[in-house]
Length: 165
Image: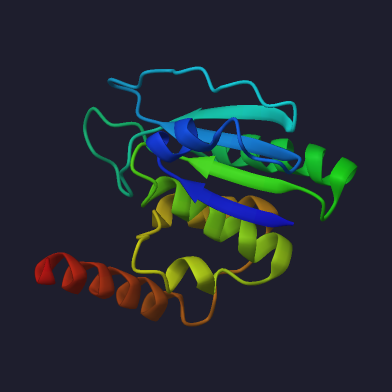
């Protein structure tokens, strides 16, 4: 099983050229989300669209990633995993490919291969903790023992990198 995190632009650019059996989880904002069709690819098995804003706590006018969203992702992934097992690529994209898609893929990577460090330790990503936690919750997978440190370190790396630029 393999995982990829894309931005909306990366998804558009790569949609036609992916050569593995794959499913796509598309996460977009409620306000202003423009649904765009992906180029045809006969290796794409299915797509799931999740609409939520990139927030981690209740915020007026914003839609949080819900328990229902997490359950939908679990059902979607398990359906295709049962059929293709480890011969499956799971792609998740959001607008920027930094937070929501990273939170989703980090959780799925922890569930299916037991390792999410490649997401948390990558300066390119700042995983959305609400998405990460809710997906792990529906799979009944506990948070890592050092979760607070993992989140803190990820946020600090991103802050330092943005400050240096």
